[in-house]
Amino acid sequence: MIQVEGLTKFYGEHAAIRDLAFTIGQGEVIGFLGLNGAGKSTTLKILGCVLLPTSGRVVIDGHDVVSQSHEVRQRIGYLPDVPPVYEEMTVGEYLAYVARLRDVPAKATASHVGEAEEKTGLRDVHGEVISTLSHGYRQRVGLAQALVHKPALLILDEPTSGLDPLQIVEMRDVIRGLKGAHTVLVSSHILPEISQTCDRLLIIHKGTLLAQGSEEELSRSLGGPSIVLEVRGERARALEALQGFGAVEVREGAGGVLALKVAAAPDLRPQVARAVVGAGLELLRLDANEGQLEALFLRLTHGQEVKA
Picture (cartoon, rainbow, N blue to C red):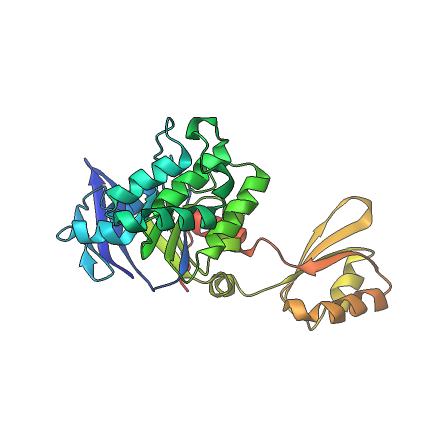
C-alpha cells in the first residue's frame, strides 16, 4: 500500500525528516511513533499530498504522491491533529458534504454516510450540530469524514489527542475495527495507544527512522522478554534461588524489599515463584515485564539505535 524511499523534507536549512524508507502492506495497522517534533506530522502531510517532499519518493497504492497526487487523494482518508469540521453543520450534513467532495455518487451518499457513522459510533448524533458535541465526538466526526468515501488507506495524526480515558478506549476500539477493510497509519507519542492498537511500529526520532517491526521483534532487540518480581529477604538468597533462569537485575528498596528483573520468558513465572518461595523468601509480586515498548523507545531516543 505504501512504499517510501529516501524521503527528505527541508524547511529552510532544517531537515524535518531525512532519508526515510519503509513499506506498509495492505490491511496493516501501523503505529508511527515519536516525540513531539520528531517529524511524524511532516511525513503524514507528504503522504496525504498536503506537502511536497524535498527529495525521495512515495508511492501509495501504485501512484506517486507528486506526479499522481489526484489519484492518491482519491485513495486516502486523512485525519489531521485538528479535526477539519464545520461546526455550524449537523453531523449528517457535514458527512454528506464531504462525501460529495470525495465524488461519492449522489445515490450512494446516504449509505456511505450511514456506514461511516456506524463504524465511528455517530448514529445517535446524526442530526446534532457539531458545535454542540463533546471533544470526543468531534474527534469521531473527524474520523468519519476520513472514512466516508471508503478509502484504501487511512492516515490518522494523533487521533486520541485531548480525549479522556474512556474516550481513548472507545477510539482505540474504533481503530481496531478498521483493520483489514482499510490500511491504517496511526501517528502518536502515546505509547500504550500504539502498543494496544497496531500490528507493527515505525519509530522516528529527530527526522530519522530508528527502528521498525512488531513490538515482539523490537522487544527482542532489547534482549528478550523478562519477569519482574518483588521479594522480602536476603539479597544473596534471592540471587541463588534465581540461578539458571537468566540474568538478574536487583534494586533494593525500603523494608528489606528487593525488586528483581529476570531475563526469562513469561511462561516460566510458575517455576520462578516456586524457586523464590522454596528459598524461604516472601513473594510480594510477580508478573511478566511491562513497559518493553517504553524501554525500547527511551533507549532509541537516547541515541542507541536498534533495528528489527
